[in-house]
Length: 279
Image 1 (cartoon, rainbow, N blue to C red):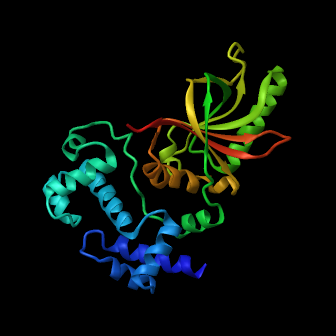
Image 2: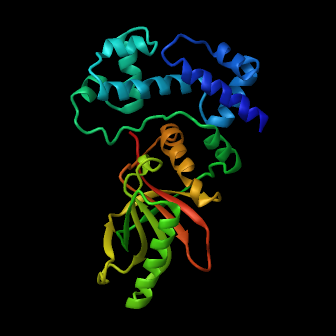
Image 3: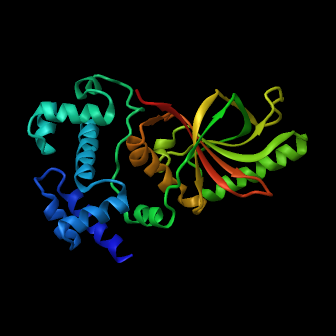
């Protein structure tokens, strides 16, 4: 894990200098590697070239300031080491698919996917649980029955699972056996969990007791197998939305992700993310 620690040292150096002029040679020095070796190891560990990481982090922080402060675009461009507002605007539009001038007057920022700082724990998780190549599947209209959660901890989610199982048994509901977590704001999973613990049911089923029905329209999904601890799945979700999808040629829907936990006979966890192909 020593190489990972060295890469993380370079990330800390980059993060400390987002508003300062730096070279990739200086970042390599922070890791204790030659520039060639550093670039190769960094890409393997993070999915980014060092230059790409710095640019996307600068744009992410600039977007936050653009939304939350009164700073002018030209000042943000210069603060984050872009030569001029035109260069900044082109890079900003390429990353966020919106012009910074439009974002400034836009009241809805929910579709922005920032690149947040990469942590050592996330890098270690990715090394131990590399992203498997997904398969594309098509699902027709889905119907789920479950319990809503807001900001739940893993322990309280487990209690919701048990409560859901008890309700299903009590009401003798016919289900498709697989249990799911439906995430309604998956790009904010690490800071604001909002969704349902649910089971798939027949479209014509009734909604008994405290359970809530949720219908999900037909869509194509990327299906990613997941082999790590469920408590750490937020690391994989964060990486998928912030790093994997921007390089994939596909655009994820950001209003929903499904985590299928399997059933008593088959415990394989898979992540299902609805997608649109980019033009």
